[in-house]
Image (cartoon, rainbow, N blue to C red):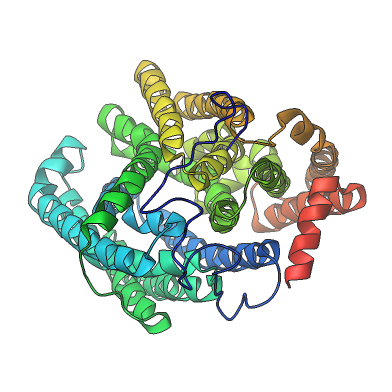
Length: 521
């Protein structure tokens, strides 16, 4: 990636063939061989990546919006302890989903050889490993529930959530093939449709009094429908086996999956400790505050970096670093107003009820969490795209180790102390990630990137002033401190003043990113 690494040698992982000696098939991710889908037949890679970001944004809004509706419905209808049970069940299935395909589906985006043989091999690996995980978790669910202090219904939640793991593993192969080909529209249809239908099922059952099992039913419907629709938008990939492909997939996929697994553990080690030390009620409070603080990361960071990954895979030399700077700038600009709202108006979370008072303090402590986590994620995507998933995995491991040690010290002090620890450790990891990028990513200049953020800083300051003014006006008008009207007014004040200021100032990189999106539309 960088001419500064190892005396100028540029090392790239070779997966089933030299990086620049790709098989001449229509799936190879380069300018000569790529055959984009219907949404990408014309235009530059930048334009196609921008279209991908827009489609991923649509997908993120639909999928995560549906999940948020389910979460808010459960939060409004269930006790905090029940929401803690949901958090534990989700943790188990997220870890299992990563182990279910060992990173082989993600490796297909970077693949440098015969992608058809590799995809069939990935399906076989996914089916075998996901089925094994399902059986293991099915029989160990009671023990897991006891260990996590979730004896009251925990085993049933775990068993219900893991039954679709094989279907998700197979669907992931098709989805990653479509992402490799920059066919983002087809890529999002199965996931978005499955999420909406699953959310409708979960919400209807929750309002009928089914409790946490409504979420389980919705997840099962979503998993099965995602697989079926994946086969509609792309011919089914049948199981097969090629030993050379398996070795290549696992050599790239193992550290790739390892980094993803470490991320899940890093994002959930607090859940485990809070559940074990403080109990289900405290976990429910922490879980809600954390999920709201984490939502911008899911809706924005994963959207932008998901579209950027195949684009960065096509870059060479210093253009990787320049593209990474643009991604970091765009992420900062998108996340800043949401950080302002979390810092200055977290009490609006109590619209869900006064029972969530502790969650307000958690949200305030984690106001910057999505941003600092997003910086690390964007840099890790650049490392993965350059054939260095091992470096990304080591960053994840460092984050997990530091966070685990810190949480062991503070967890008995309560959920607010846990939230502050998450923010501080994640910020330190982001600083290290920037230093790593400076050394390993050719063309990446952190000073130039920071200087480009002055319009974002100015717009954020204006948004803070606007929020304080509207808050004071609300007091003068006698509006309740926590109300729908006040929440809407505060949100509009921050978003409109921030967007207007940013539009007027328009830094060079933000303007360049906007031109790419404009030309792609």
